[in-house]
Image (cartoon, rainbow, N blue to C red):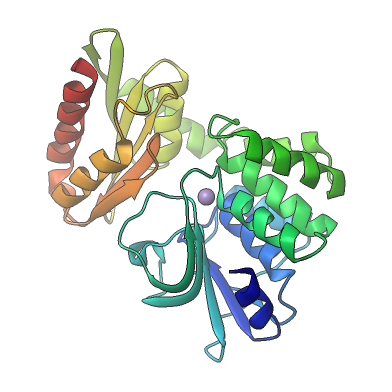
Length: 307
Ligand SMILES: [Mn+2]
């Protein structure tokens, strides 16, 4: 992998990532861009508000799509379905920390879900290639902090990366945290409160599994439900498509895997699902089957938690 990075260094490299890019996608992309003097960072569609704030803080901007690129790098996803407006079948490099699924064909791939974030993987690569500059360090630090879910997905490697990157970054840690953990805006808070209001609770022994419906911000709502006491939360959204976002509290790993449950829900919705063990999502065009999909999620959950 390292020799390949050196080999294509001078080429016109196009770096992209998953749809609705987050801080990890944006952070790892701009850090990696620093290695390639002729690289462009292109988003398949919109990026989220935290990622926008990171870019503003560091004065970074996205490039337009360049069809004449000579090498393609895909970050923070390896799924063909999660690339928004891009239809990518083949890439030169894929780096991702999500559980393996329908993979893009890649010349060189690191897909390893033992990492907290794509930024942590990219840190491991960049530090072997040469010195990491302050802007890249801040990008990676932000990516790692935001994807490690309050360090719940972290291990010694993560803290090692954070220590080294903090020494280089010119932005202080508090400022970065503020960027990532800022209070949700009013529409997000409405969605969270509606999710709580509409929440259905199922008790399985000492576990609480909940489901709810919102018309926006389903992943934020699922996170909030876990924060206030659910062990597992499934939040459905129906709009132009049907989506379910699921979250599980730490400590239930090994007992159940949300990525697998979301794969089942995705089938019912006529689409797909996947993600991490503790945070996953499903989507598809079958809006009328949302209730059925939610029911299935709870069924599997009861089975797993009851055993
Ligand atoms: Mn990520």
